[in-house]
Every structure is written in C-alpha cells, then in structure tokens.
Image 1 (cartoon, rainbow, N blue to C red):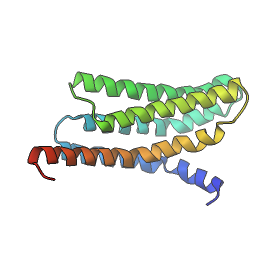
Image 2: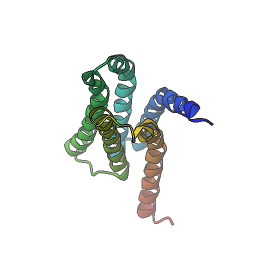
Image 3: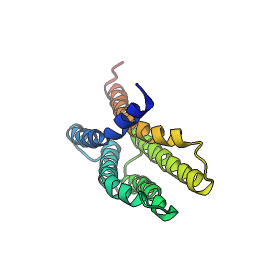
Length: 171
C-alpha cells in the first residue's frame, strides 16, 4: 500500500470512528448500568470525536485561505477541543465522585498527544518555516484516533476481568 492510499484510508475512517465511538458508548451504558469512569470517558470521547468530525469541513474551508490566522484556526481549534475534552474528563470525574480508571487515563493521554502534535506542527511549519514533523503529524493524528478505540476497549475488558477476579476469586 503506498503512502497516498494510506493517507486517504486514514482520513476516511473519521466517520466510521464516530459511529464506532457511539456504539461503544451504547454498549458501555448497557454493560455498566450506572455512572462509572468508563462511561464518563466514553461519553467525552464520543462527543469530542463527533464535534471534531463535524467541524472538519468548516475548518478546512477556513484554513484554505492564505495567512497564519487562518491556519491557526485549524490547529488552534483542535488543540482547544482536545484541552476541553481533558477538562471535561477531569470535571465529570470530580463532579460525579468517580475514581479515574485506566481507560480515562488513556483517553486523557491521547488528547494530550493530539494537542501536542497539533501545536508542534503549527509552530514548526508556520513560525520556523520547516516541515520536519510533517509525516509525524500527517500519520500520527489519524493513527492515534484509530488506535484509541481498540485500546480503550482492551483496558475496559481488562478492568472488568480484574474486577471479576477480585470479587469472585476466579483465577
């Protein structure tokens, strides 16, 4: 598979990820049956992904204009959304008195990584006029988004297996 095709595949997965996160949220609601760190995290991730997916066409039109302000609208918006997602994770866990699960830590770390990649690439490309991190940005953002869902599912399943082992003494 050549890089252009890989890039096209990675960016076309956005809509499927959006659907996948909401299916995951529905599954968590049915399985968890009460407020939990996992449910909070899946809700924040699903809503954040939906907001980002819906804003891409508008932000792309804005960023297509010449000028650093228009480019900042693209990168800054995604950084702001990532920062807001981290804040919401923290705020909802605090407000609902939930301890932070590994799933929540993973999602928070992913949001930090995404915002960091956006920031680094913007600064490098538009302030230093270089593009050493272009491939890292181009492929890193979609790969983090794609890897987050199976990683969250894995941590959720492992959390439930560990809980059941402790509760029922099953080895």
